[in-house]
Length: 558
Image (cartoon, rainbow, N blue to C red; front, side):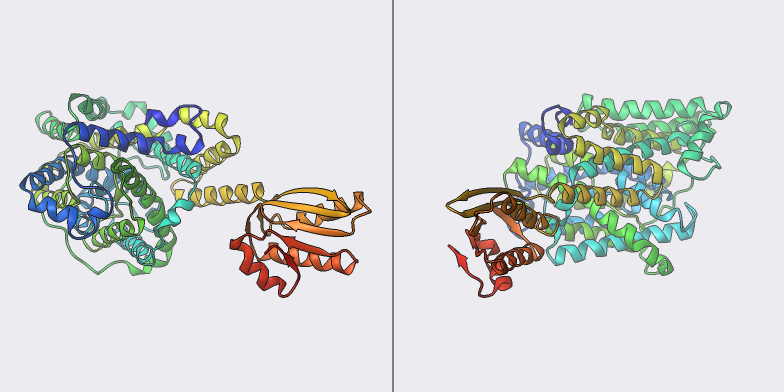
C-alpha cells in the first residue's frame, strides 16, 4: 500500500498502488515461504490441470486445507462485523460465508481469491436497504437476500455474455474517491458501538454520530477499551506472524471479558445454532427498488475482486479471465441470496492470507466455506460478544483505505483527476447512505471530463503550390469533428491562392459516424465552390465507414 502514495508514480499507479502493493507483497512473501503451485490463470480453470493436480497431491491438498482453515479463523469474526455494518443480525454474515464460498470454490478462476462479506459491499447494502425496511427486521433480512440475488444474476449475465472487461471503464480516480469516502463513512458508523451506544436513536449517519459525540456522559469506557484492544490485536497480529488470528483472539477475549466481568454494553445477542436456511420466499415487491443498487454493487464490488485476481495473475505471470470470475462471483451471490446471506465479494485481506498460507488451488475457498458451515451449529457461543469488538474489527480493516497523503499528492500528479477524486469523495459524504448515487455521479463527471478533453482533434495545415494540405491528428468524432470545418475555412481565408485541398488522415486514431459525415460535407462544400478536395492515408480501421459514407467520392492513396 505505501508504494501507491508516492509522488511521481502517476495517477493510475498511485490509485492502484494498494492493490499491487498488498497483493504483490503477499505473493512474494508466499514464494519466500515455499508458497504456491497453482497460477491465477488458465491452469486454474481447465478442469484438469491445476486443481486436479492439487487434489491428487497430498501435499497440495494439505496446503489447501491449512489455507482454508486459516482464512476461516479470520472470516468468522469479520463476516459477523460486516453483517452488523450492513444492518443485519451477525449470523447472516456467517450464512454469507458458508454456501457462497462453496459455490465460488467450484467456479473461481483465481485459486487464491477468497469470497465473502466485505466492508464496502456491506456499506452499499445498508445504503440500498435502509430506505425500504428497518435494519434488523425480517423485511430487511429478506431484502438483503434479494439484493444478493440481484447482484449474483447481474454478474452471471455479464460473465455469460463475455462483458467482464466493462469494469475497466470505471476510472481509478473515481474508485479511489469512492473508496475513501466510503471508508470514512464506515469509520463514522462505528462510533456508537465503539462508545457503547449502539442504540443511538437519531436517524442518518451524521445524526447518530453527532448524538454520540454530544453525549459524553453516556460513553462506555469498557466499550472503548474493547474496541481499542481489538484494533491493536488485529494490527499487531500481522507483526507477530502472518497467520496469527488476531481478530479471532480479540473475539475470544471479548466473550470472556463479557462473561467474567458482567459486561453491560451492547452485545451480539442470540445467534441461532443452525445451518443456513434455503428459501425462495423473498420480498419480491422490493425488486424494482433494488435493481439499480444491485447493478452498482455488482460492478463496484467486482472491481475489488478484479484488482485482487489481476494482482495475483501479474505475480504468477499468467493470463486472467474476468468473465469466468464474474460467473464465480455471481454464483456466490446467488447462493448467498438463496441461503439467507448478503451480497459478497472478494476480500483483499482474506485472499492475501489464503496465498500466504500456501493455497494451491481454488478449493481452499471451499474448505473455508465448509469450516464455517461446521461452525454454524455452535455459533451461539458468541452471543455474549460485545459489539465494540466487532467495531474494532471493522475499524482495523478499513482504516488503511483512507490515504490522506495520496488524496493530496494526486493534485500534483493531475489536477483534473484530483478534482474527480475529491468530488466523488465529497458526494459520498453528502449523499450517505445512498452512496451508490455518489459513484454514478463520479462516473458521469469522469466521462464528461474525458469528452471535454477529447473534443479537440489536432489539425496542422500548410500550402504548397496552391494545394492546402490539412493533417488530422487524433480522434475525429462528434465532439471534435466540427472544428475540421473551422480549421479549413480559417486557412482558406488566409490563403486566397488555394486551388485544391488534400486532407491527410494518416494520424487519425478513430472516427465515428459524425466525423465521417463532416468529412463528406467538407468535401462536397469545397467541390461546390470550385475547390476539389480529396482524402489520403485513410487508416484501415476507418476505411469501411468512410467508404460507406462517401460512396464513390474520389480518394487518393486509400
